[in-house]
Length: 205
Image (cartoon, rainbow, N blue to C red; front, side, top):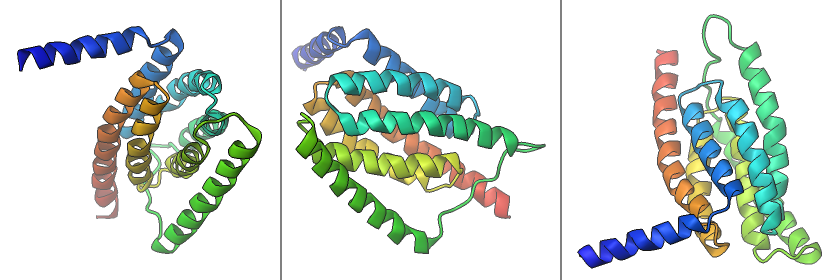
């Protein structure tokens, strides 16, 4: 058992040594901004700006063009979310809302359609090695980020799901530190869901 543990930590250290400075910046700031978002802190937005810019360059280098484009979207939504939260804060933070059941079908249709389009586009016109996986994760993240900017509770359920999908994708692309981050983000996103659900229930009672 001791030998196995030593081998695991040796492997982990070797992977961390292979991690670029750019990925370190992206991962650390990504961790911080998700934690702050789960705490409903408005500071998650400026921190996320640093993270998305870093990941944009990182994904470009890995030919993950769907996720690279997603970072551009994240950048705009970060500024939008920052503004939206500021302008809707008076004596109390903007209330959390829920996604109506009828809109879930629209979300599913949108994600599937966008996934197919992005996958086809990247397979046809880029050198991406994971066009459809990249397209699917990009599409789900697109919707989750929009729901987050609107403070809709179910954004966290989508983040849990897509973070699970990202882990094997990052491992395949040898972005091991990012894969490790996303394992942690699964837990944080689920905790964020529980915290927001508690706050939502307090709002309506």
